[in-house]
Image 1: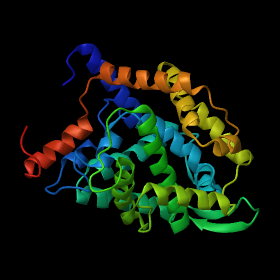
Image 2 (image 1 turned 180 degrees about the horizontal axis):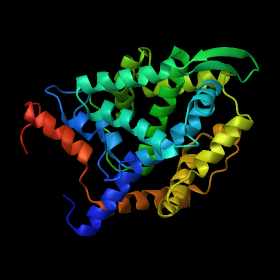
Image 3 (image 1 turned 90 degrees about the horizontal axis):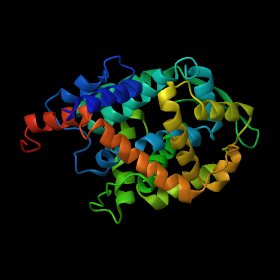
Image 4 (image 1 turned 30 degrees about the vertical axis):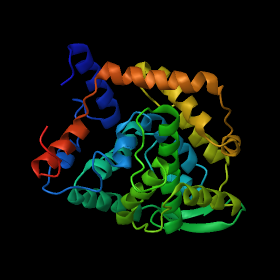
Length: 309
């Protein structure tokens, strides 16, 4: 438990903002703690370490900006999402998938993947590519799944490297980055994507191919979505911190993508150390405990995968 009343209050408010639950208890906590089997990852695995750290607060914003560059994923969000009416609710849904997939049992991951796949069935339509070609799409199309996945993967990895502090284990891979990319590729197999990049070289090549093929573009809808991402309807107390996190996300983007999105980066010497300091302060303010991690570890201890603490 947090070691004082102030930490407990701040921790509850922080969790309430991210989960949407008035008591600050993520509704998916029981899903993660339940079950008699391991999941995709253990506490020593790269995705667990990256997603448990606070670089994810920046990575999530960056991923949304990256995804907005693809007119297919952008059209899906604009036409089939409640992001303007219930931005925090949509955020909570995305966090649920991330946390259950990272920390939950195999059964929990299967259930969460089924939920996402059912949502994807309703998302379809038509969009214009960067070359002006009209193209029909479904959210479950492999190319859209691939773009969303690589935008997510590269964003969380880049922001962890820039703003977090826990080292990513390399395992059997050449680097921690390669290990994270290969391990996290398992997360999208239940969504229908079994050709995800398996190392940093493949990840960078996949992003570059989308760009060089002329699929990425930014139009008025893109810029409106970016404007919303920049100024979402957050509580007043959270807006100042969020603006810094947004600036950190913009800084981490490639210059070409920043230009397409109409964004300018603030100085690295200012944004990077300030963001790292603020994220450390948030961790100290709310305490080191994580109900999600604790629930997952308790399950792994209960079934004998981990030794009892």
